[in-house]
Length: 230
Image (tube, rainbow, N blue to C red; front, side, top):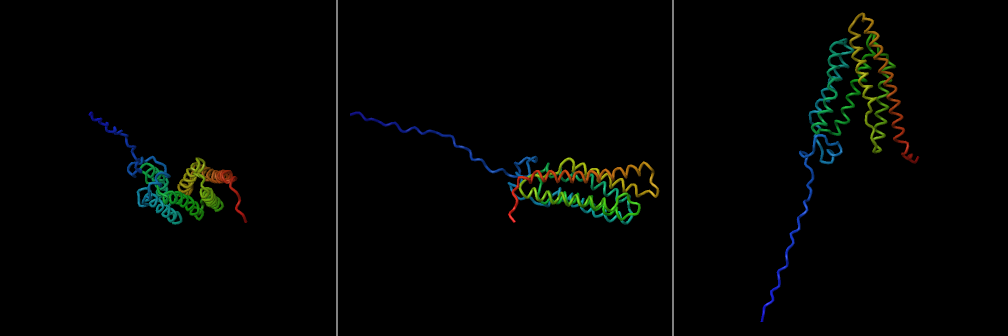
């Protein structure tokens, strides 16, 4: 009697699917957007960009103290250093992945302090090319745009700074520097007088126009939002 042998079932080797691992902070490229960085975990506010912003804030306070005291040359140097290093903290934060929510709020706040504070301090100086109504327009515009940004971004929409706002900042810085140089002369040369007045008036006009442009942009973004019931 013959014995029938049953073949053993053949085992199929199925390749196992690799389970993706969550990205680690070291694997995220420095160019990653802030949304990705926030999804990984909280980042410490004690970093180089925030330290640079804090130094710039101290410089802003120094400028506001030097102008009323009549140290216009020292105020010019400190203001130039603070304004010229404004881009450094943002560049460092994006390049090395050190963007924090604190920094995104603190950095524009310091920018407003150094500009608004300088214009206000210049109002109290004798023979200053900056009038009180000019400083009021500068401060009012910053308060308006800050309120609009909080309202729009609070609804989940983007309200980033435009190129018009950035050029406004550049022209305002040029106006402050020109005014400080102008005040160093007992009798300023005519070319410096005309240049200073042109920069001051130009910065005020661009300040008003950029505020108007931001208001229209906010109105367009919020026009589809339903009104809250009274």
